[in-house]
Image 1 (cartoon, rainbow, N blue to C red):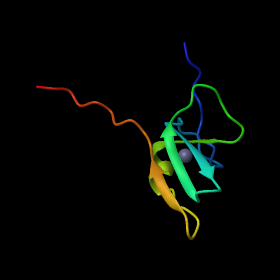
Image 2 (image 1 turned 180 degrees about the vertical axis):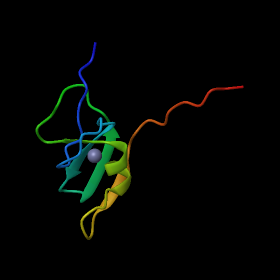
Image 3 (image 1 turned 90 degrees about the vertical axis):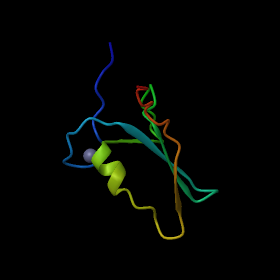
Length: 73
Ligand SMILES: [Zn+2]
């Protein structure tokens, strides 16, 4: 049994699908799979807000999510 996590964006009630963290040393926004436990240093976002995510100027986005395996024929 898992509890549903909600997107951290204000006024958004969609289910979170990814966890985003900031690496200030590397200036990287890291998108990862939803972490099992809520972490105060990370934000959970829904798919829509992950897609819309724009890094601050001078930052890169690193998507470390594991791709969903496609079914083999
Ligand atoms: Zn959202």
